[in-house]
Length: 427
Image (cartoon, rainbow, N blue to C red; front, side, top):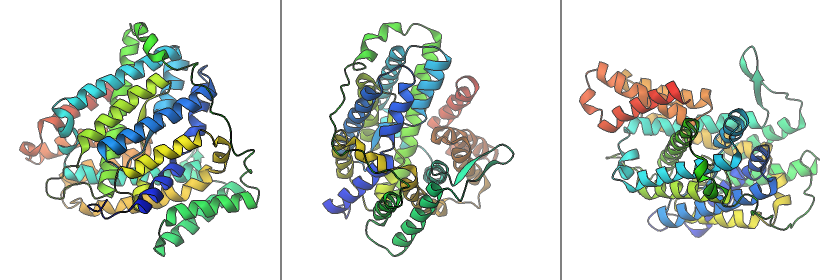
């Protein structure tokens, strides 16, 4: 902590802020996976167990201020595509998640472990960080109802007369005021005040209870292992590759973004400190999560909210793990942490992360193009991994046309081919 100029208090506030910003997964994941026929109460417990395991690994093994839990997007693919559209039993789908996690582990144990992220050009790293900023800011605006879908314009302003939307706007204003005033933990206190005001005015229902028992995970625990033999079709190979590719690059993209924001990227070499251990932690967490009974576990971009209030070490991730453990007994209280409450944290962090665009040389078009597409496609596709993929495809192209192809390393060429094949056959 001394090396990173932080303290136990700052790590605790960072961990608490990250936990509050990502705690929605405790309500969303059981609802999504439950529609496949899985026990919702068991999924709730599996989600907590996966988050605890992932956060402890990231904190104690990698010493990264990044929290992990079953990822949004991946759980939707698991539910709507794999199970409901392709009619693959949820037990077999979990087995696919487990195999994807094992492949991820094998990759991180190879010599490519440290090179995977460190060979990404610095400009793209900063673009990833800024792109994630746009992504989570838009996520905050969208989930709170401030921005809504629109058939003619794609997106439009939501109902500004809605109490929930007004509460979100109030929270954003309060959060911005606190951060502008340099109040320590301003993002967290902004969420706290918003939740309190929401309950006072009846916009957020008061919790129905305080303490509850922890539901059994038995109905889904270990199903991934016992159904490995059902992986015997080309369709399941596609499922595994999709889980592997999206999980790998969602985690990688988030690690780059959070590491950049936390000052963990060497300014001269562009290397991310300790990235190999962080990737290994994410890979192992995915495998463990599949055994517990949930969709792929990934690094959460909401970790940037904890970094924004001071988190710099893995201690914040350990605190997140402890908070998830506590949440297992206090699930009714989490009902007050709504999207209107977390919107301010996501938007403020998005603003802060955009500062990284200053390190991109926009005067060089061959650099500006892949950086731009990395950022804009994360936002427009609502996917960190797909934005990263588009940027990876454009970088070798523009550098080659400019005559700088010797500066493009073998990994970047390989990734370009991989992502082209991904878009052609998987996406």
